[in-house]
Length: 400
Length: 144
Image 1 (cartoon, each protein chain N blue to C red):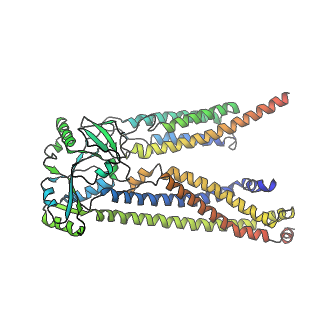
Image 2 (cartoon, chains in turn orange, purple):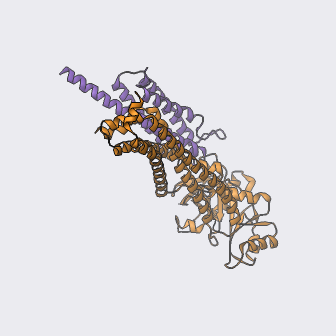
Image 3 (tube, each protein chain N blue to C red):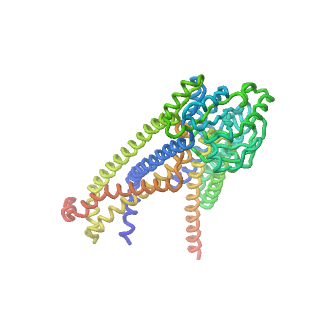
């Protein structure tokens, strides 16, 4: 009975020493678990962005800001609008190697009634669209009616509820899955509804969009390149033959993001490994020093009948309890930081960030816990061996 | 006032003080816009009010010696903290866009602090009620 309770009693008797060791284990757990979740979230976000863009090339107006604004819309959800003549779409479609084209029209709402932000409204052509429809089908299979909208996952508007834009009641008929990108904050609708919204904006005296109807202009053209054609070559041909536009390879846009993401992920991984190694060294040193300090205590235990095996088990039990407490604290603190503040991390880094699902997160938590337990056991194993092999008589005589 | 005896009371006071002060400063909800406040502002006010009540009850708990009263206060604090955690987004709607401050900072910070406060006061209530039961048992036994 005493032997079973002894490790816990020993730990409670020295609260500061125990707290310091628990803190190290918690720090190690937080670094391993938090680092894994953050890296996976960034990777998920990038994969989601890549899948979601769906097109090989995106054509935007030639103005220098257009490409940057498009990236801001896609990555950070910063609402923006830019326009080019609608006839350009036919000229782009005529370029050799272009298989499918679909135009989109960007509109920025005035502040929505519920909050002080502008919302990106994307008008798309249902007949030609191949980038949004595949995602809409997951939530909505019918065609969009008048004043019906599809909302991104970051809008709290629920399916079946209405949202007022320029005073027009728009009914949400579908909601998209989260992508961790700026696309989550947009509203998607047909060009007919966009026209209604523009008319409403004119009636409200918001003149900025007055002469820019989707009848005359478009914001971007999404292109699917025919099989066997080089995407870079097709993009180059569009830039050469169609004036006033810039064809951007979606892959190049993603590459820039992937490079930044890779640098951040690399930093996270390096910090994770550094913390792990440092914590392992500190724990080994701490257990080793403690083994020296506690030699007499263990010698006394030996004289009252503890076997060498039981002494070893005592040290390993203490280390296991310390690690278990550290793991619990580390996992709780990390889970309370990384998951609820995921959106904030996405905003601050400007990178797509999509938290892993519950199963994957549990996997990361279990891996981190196992790594800390094994590290703790290995750190204390040598001390356990030393203490169990020590010459009890000599140790007790040293104190005389 | 012995620190060891009041460790829960001090923790409760700290958690509620951070919740109250933070809800009007560091993690406040979205601010005024064109002279209008949004729904999240009222959620912030509700959280601040609960925070003030938690501070007052934590102070009373600190200066009370009766274990029964302490246990009662701890239970109340547990319930108030749970209510505070439910205010942003569940009881009172926040802004439409989940990228807004009230969703990204205010809501998670309030939930985390309220959960911490609930956990501390829950543990306090459990331990204090057990202590009270034991002292009642000892008194009754002595009287018998």
